[in-house]
Length: 229
Length: 229
DNA sequence: CGATAATTTGATTTTTCTCAAGACGCGTGG
DNA sequence: CCACGCGTCTTGAGAAAAATCAAATTATCG
Image 1 (cartoon, each protein chain N blue to C red):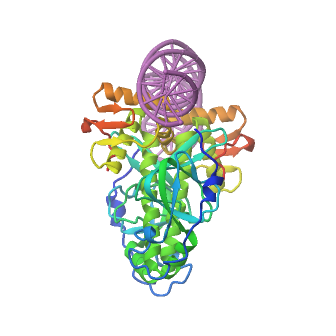
Image 2: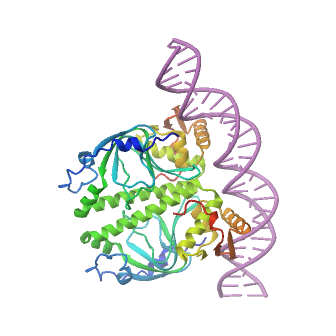
Image 3: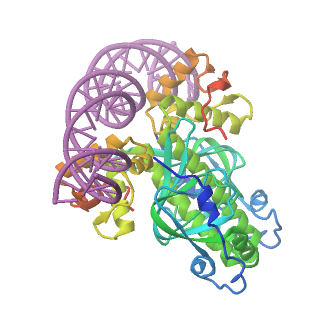
């Protein structure tokens, strides 16, 4: 797992914020990052920000995919979330990132200064409410994830994961996964081998099809556990 | 695990809210629930609210302890949080509870109407900010918990848990745990036997002392993993 | 085409779960 | 005061799940 240093990414952080802070209405923040944010590109496996770094920006995925993760001293890694196009990440209530963000594949990311958001929030209650609602949605998905990590077997986790990704990426029952098996493993609290074996087993069961290793076709929806909401 | 029905609890929900909504300053909400909330008692293993129930109230633990949990169809249970005296729970951004809350031991709970909070928030930006900050803290502790569930061995989980409880309950290295082994197991994503064995092993290692089964004395702080922040 | 990374598969070990039984603690009623 | 019952906790033995170690296969990219 080669994650390049943050240095070169920071180099290109020539942010253009400062304009557009004046008149943002109800859809204030999140719909408007496109307008006021700087566009940045991150190639595969580069760090967008690191754990413990100051949280000076708010990010939105324009294209690509991002993992939010933390690595323990001994190398064990937990991925707490995947961020897909249209999704926001990197906003902390404190001023330091508690997890790192890395591009899974080449990604275009919109970046807006945290100070802009804070200033906006100070004057506009709707912005605060939107930020809060966003935090609440994150909380909910963390709770779902905890259910998965605490209660489900390996096979159940993989099924829940594939189903979730299909829903989020394509809305149907066919997906092209952007992430590697290792990422899936670290998201599900399993090893890469266990993930691979679970997938193989699902293919044998004809629960899923696997035209290529990243392309999943969900076959028997019946086989899907309760984490489906 | 006998959790009594919510019916009898609801019976006594003669809430007295409606007053006190006028003039709440910066410390608006959370410091003032004592003043405007109704006091209720819940005995051991009674439900405070159920999963999927309308979220009409906000709660604060006056004394006792509460578990926030969800039970899957097949009986597997995940406890996502323990709430101790002084802590707030039960506030959802949507209008339905996504988890249940149950008293672990006899508890006194302060209850305030959600509508009161919402009305307050509509007029007072600080209240929104406080609610948001609270949600953000919850999010953070869920993320910590996910790290635990996804990365740590049984022994490490138990150690992290005991350390956390000692810190939260007594601040020192001696605690009287309010919850049973089964609750600990469901919080840590382990079985009761594995929790018990891990604790026995810690006692043998002299990492902890165990005067009684609920009374924990932390001995070798060195043995504590990185989830210590 | 060859090198490198990603994925799969196999054999084995370790961890955790499961099933079962015993020990302990505690309140109640004799 | 003691015996009993009940819930909780601990311990043991065996089974199952997942991890680990190792290697083979398949994809990807210059």
